[in-house]
Length: 440
Image (cartoon, rainbow, N blue to C red; front, side, top):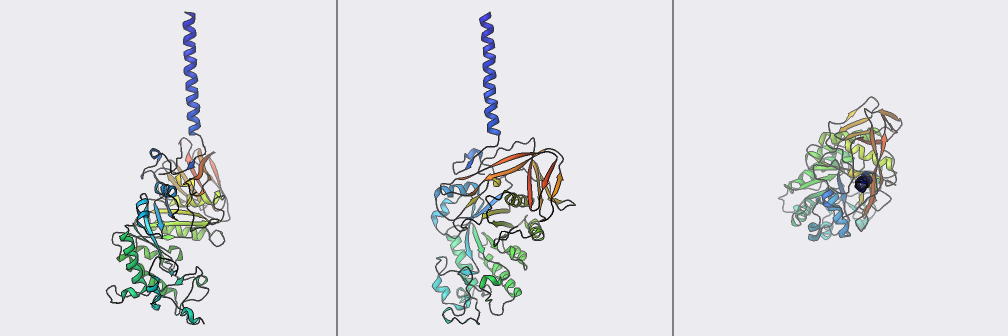
């Protein structure tokens, strides 16, 4: 009997020990921990299309298969100037859009037939006050591209149609997209006015904002005609001057300078921030819109990153995508990824609201998003219960081996949260467990 009791006591202690180990390991798995984003993500961990709050766009420089595998499982839209069957076969997850600039052409780019373009002087914008006979008074941009005439368009059935810039652009780009079965066209540099600094202050002869804008309207509508069952998205919503109207003529647009000025990384200000948010709120149900935010030192600037993502979450849905770019890296050769892209708050419970202090709020099934877009005042926001605040760590440049190190941590918040100027907060309900896995 004595040995039997010892056996029973030992068995109980053994079961307790095993239970303790299990609980400890389980607790570690649930705690905030490092995890690198990679192409080896377990597919069973990938979120389904229904479990997403954040949709991502990138312009891809084709380098390695590991990067392409990562892009396939993490991004929703890819823009590329490359045109080949191999790339089309590899990019299977996101929508693949062909990048073609409508405003400038480069002699060393193999995107169009340069000899044909060069033979038609009417395709170019000119400034006759220049004393440069070798350039035929063409206007060169600060990006070393020739400024093309966005109003050079004739009837599509005209015998010389392909000798005019917009006709040639629409026909050639559509042939390329359909031949390689891309999902659509990204029309870059489709601003609805022309910044003098972009052309060394040499504006086209007889330029006016109205004529330039009206030319964009005609051009984008004409281009879309050649893509009846494909996506056409233009870059130029941020240019203003009636650019929002072009959403009606295409499938969507890009706002390339959200929140911060790329030239000096300074905040544009609350008024312009609000204008972007309201524009997207008006159009997000039936148009594709991409937000791009560019800033120096963005990888290390956690407050700015959370501000951008929190702002995006105010108006996000399946039609609105985002891309954050750290200007410390070469934009043309870098793919970016940040752990906050993995945040999932569940379905939104309402549209955003604004309190008396100008704080924007949006509630989701699993938490709240708060944004203070003001650039001078700080506020303390009183909460209805305990929450945990998201704090991203790491992220940034995607390595050639398909790794992008980063993870999310969570800080407890009791009843109130502090919002300094130009800041956002993403809060999960205290009882909600949020294990973050890379990928979708």
